Length: 322
Image (cartoon, rainbow, N blue to C red; front, side, top):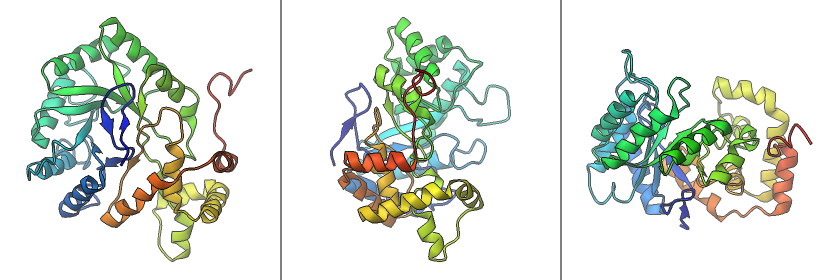
């Protein structure tokens, strides 16, 4: 495993990040434990979660699973760069969601308790909160850092101008600012190339793409359907819109002799500012298969073919102006 720096920091993380969103709703606790143990065996040290994962209001199901896994000891917590998120509703009362200083403080303490740890390595704003000024956001985050409860701050689903506003507000406070951004980014969803990636690259913000295989569309969906496996309704609906691209993509993966999911991840690792796409294996076998990604080196000709299959964007404003 060749580790990489998270953005402009000295923090070393694996080039694939283990996403835990399936833990609880789709993956049993026993299987989740096995997947996390296997991830460490393979050298994956970067785990991502959120206080709302598990999708039962206020229960923090997935964070609790991680906490019970850490509690087994064996260096599990020490070997893990732990990332979680704050923003989503954790209750029905006012201030039990979003990014007020009050909610950030309470949510952080709750996440620490659920995961049985004294600090969070990367604490991420799960979404932009248009009602909370960045001055308040940074005051809350800087206090958590001073208290030793968090080490780094990241964002998710921010626009390029949000990243700029966040960094300039942090600069005024002589604060480190954001070190990562977690956007929707894959070969079929390339909007972030307009402004988010250029902003991240300029500010030294590491990009951690979520949904790298486009909800399964880039994971060999046509092959699976041909073999008689069913696909979720939303995947079938989106496939109807993207069928031409997906057909051409899978045909190219066949030419390469590689699994579609691995090619999608390898492509992301070639993009500016990208540090570690988030993978969400439901089984150990899926996790093992995804490790092949790190052995795939797409050359310029292959990258050009993929751009031809699913065109992207030049940076703004060149994409829509001269």
